[in-house]
Image (cartoon, rainbow, N blue to C red; front, side, top):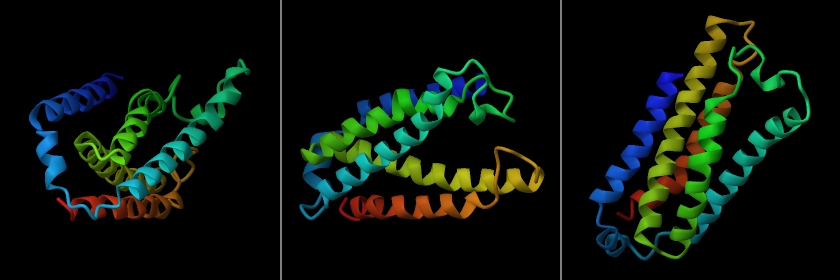
Length: 169
């Protein structure tokens, strides 16, 4: 639990440090006019919608059932910290940042690029986690080696708009 708290705290205070250190006006002036801002914003909103739907499709049924939700089986947890972080912080932040990008705000360029990078790295780490978890415990109900290529693919797809942004800086 304390590792999750430390990770969330580090992430949030890193956002504050970046926000204080970056001149978003200058960043906005340096970005080439050819950046496909609106297409990238739409991509971000689609990812937010899909991720939100995936999490809520597992959470909502558990709200009316007094037994432990199926998504917690085998985890030993009472809730999933990644659901809390995603639904409370990262998905709303990406939604707002995509709107800023749509409007060509320097904040949009900075936050969207940062979050896309986080999602690429997260996808790769989930792929590794799924593969190594399944190898360590083939009977695991929470790790599947078959999911590793899926998350590598998600990371690769997410890298496309990220690279489109970064090559313009």
